[in-house]
Figure 1: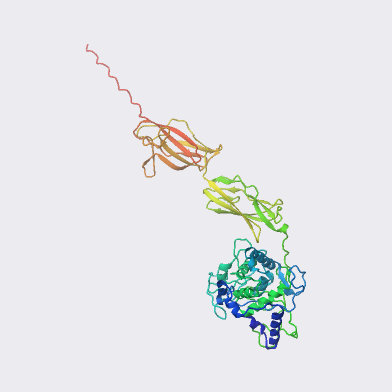
Figure 2: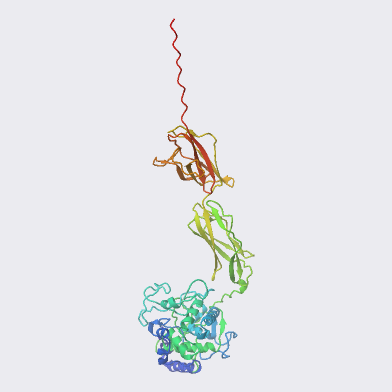
Length: 568
């Protein structure tokens, strides 16, 4: 972020002295000593020193959001955030934003206790960078309701940082922009991004992810943020600007004196332009510094003298109360669903059932649950749908409609998603096998006989069943086999003809009709007389063996000749 603070203090010629006095007062009463340029240039580790110079700052040194805090700080120096909701509006931090800062402090303390990261430092940076995510305008998951984007870092008044993320985070495929409530540039986020809310994403627009990333960035190397010099180096690594450091230091000291939680969406906004590109909420009034005579300074770029009336404030909307533990989705579990397998064309015997529980472990009713089929089969829920939505009942369970297998065999999955904001997900593996038959029989009993070199006059027909029901669409293989203990394909005797008229003694991929019947193609006899065997085997292992006979037609006995009659 480029140094913009000095410009903001000098709002008008008539208020320059007042602004200077405000800075001096804050520096004397609120902020810890600021490190000298020599300290910040060479006192840290190599990673830190590099981050403190130029474009490598976390934010790209783009303009920041806010002004100095009010001179009147909350009462009870050193008090915690559990203060009652009193004092100036600026001392309130939106609930989700405050929770994210405290969670980040706790997480970092568990992995880098020596850093001694205070959540108030994150609050100070969050205030300066985005006005606490624009006054806490985040959803239930902590993600900003609209993007908070800095200006394009195109070298025109700012650093020149060409695009590093293809516009994935900042929507700009030409240059990088600072993104989210903690204003990370995409290249820095690629290294430091975190998934603090365990939703599987590292999202710079999410205050939980961004706060933890900022905490880890500030703790880089061997910094101890309880030491003034290390804290200054950390802040300068975030944005290499002395004015920025002074601003953050002032807010840090301000929050250390006490703050309190306010509902999301009602936090006070700084009296300054937003660095974001999305809709900017109306600014809230900034307390007038003592001795200013009530003169309202002009906005940046608004002229060199006089006063400028402030735009009317928009009354805050009534926030939605945060859900209590008994109204918060805690878990999603299998409610007794067994193996999911079915034959092609059949209904699955099992129906997927899940149970939702709240954060207290009790069954949770009226939770929206979505069941989605994915995979290469044509399995569908009743009604031909691949996605269905069901709400949990009083016992917390939701059961999907019946699954019906199509004709395509293979594996597929059913993904179950419950809740919004922080959804819970279960995945079920399922499979479709080929149609089967457990019995196959010949439909007639007439002997099948043919003369050598002739065709069998009667066709062979069989019926397949599965569990005594018609088995339609079942694959059948027909093979002429030898009469051995372990039969193999016979090289002589009856045969079939393929599409090209060639002799074959095995036919595969035959299928029964919808009525379970299969009529075989014509069978031919070669010149070798004898008794032969035809075996038919179904998918599922059912088998029938049919006898075929090749015999020559009986010949008529020769005609007898009567002996000649003797001559008389």
